[in-house]
Image (cartoon, rainbow, N blue to C red; front, side, top):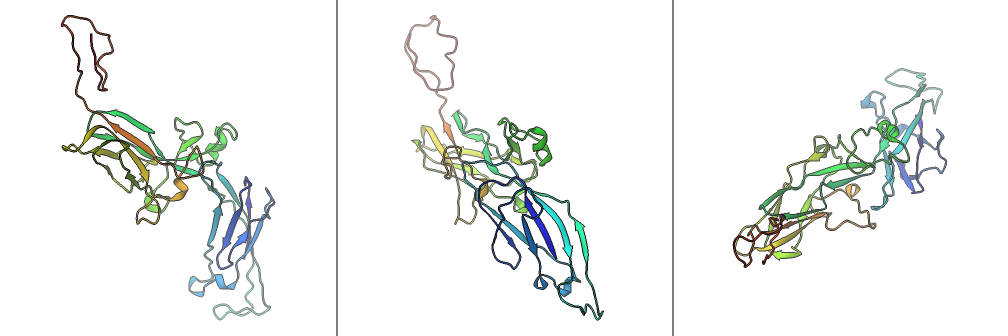
Length: 294
């Protein structure tokens, strides 16, 4: 059995395509032709207990920079051909002179997405309560300015975020191996004390987001405010870790650290001296601790 693959909108990044049992093969350099790569599945790939059927195992390895987002990769499957390789006498299940043949146009194309874990905010500041909800989602890159919104829609993307070229990965499901996100809290960069994140790893199984991720600070005597806590990705070789294809850093090709951060402050009111009956400015009731004199 042979079939053809075409990487329709390939980039300059090198690709490795691995048919089952055939080792590593570099992808051809041609673009937009159905003969980019011709793959043959031999007798070793067919099993008698599968009654002549074939399980095709094909892997793609794309180079990916963490700071270079790419439009969805479009892989087009060409025709599938079944032909007699040896003969003329082929025996199958006691049938002699068996002559397999066939030609079928396969129209089920595949898209590979450039995705990332996304926090709703990069900095949650001036948090007066002890617990703050910090939603986490998975988003997919598609340049609507270059391709157009209709083309992004054709690639299965239909829900934009407030970042123009990033779309919600509404079908992302961590239970299906689409990619896990695990987070941990780093050493406070301001103040002292401890905090906890819940849950981690973060399950994302509905609509590409989890709106129940919370950061909670301790409220014991050893805690000093303001307390700024960084949130980082957990990476391999930890048992629970963030898959690398969900890491993105707009500034450089490295793991972003921190992913986001939370700053807890107190709610002690205002301190100052003065006489009663004097008028103060209208915005004096800010949440931050400030000293006021009049």
